[in-house]
Image 1 (cartoon, rainbow, N blue to C red):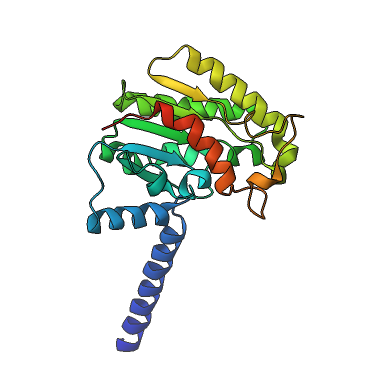
Image 2 (cartoon, rainbow, N blue to C red; image 1 turned 90 degrees about the vertical axis):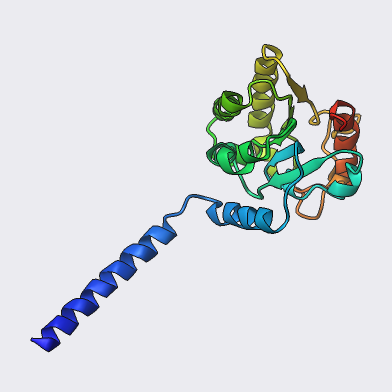
Length: 223
């Protein structure tokens, strides 16, 4: 009887362990990144009323972010590899708790890989925008257009279509601005410039970010 009890207990423990592991492996994308951000905020208190930068790796890897925007109260909460739906999923974690006075968004480029059309990227943007406006109805928003990356030349048509639809949508909204960085990053012949990118031809170097800085800074809110 004792042996049978031990066997049953062992089986029960295994089932519980299996269910726990299955649950832990079923976490949504970037769950661990979000938890790391929360832990960081517990150690280092984020600034009050920041200009909040959100989106994918082009936000997260912004060259000399703190130095570039030293005259502003800024906070970077970009997530490398994120698509629009990921940012939308974590609004309660990486946007609303900070009570931003202004929101800067760059997201959508990663969407192009799996999106059927630029229209679907636009629809995901609208969902994200609607989610933001539900709690931040008047906070100024700047959306930075999807850039043309040499390593993703096969997705250019979808990116251009998404940019067009997002820009047209934004024209009918209040307190939101579309900044086109697509065209300014091309040369006079309308060609992409590898010199603006790192070796992976996806992430920008300082020269690429310099273009973004010049276009964005005039619209940032001073303290």
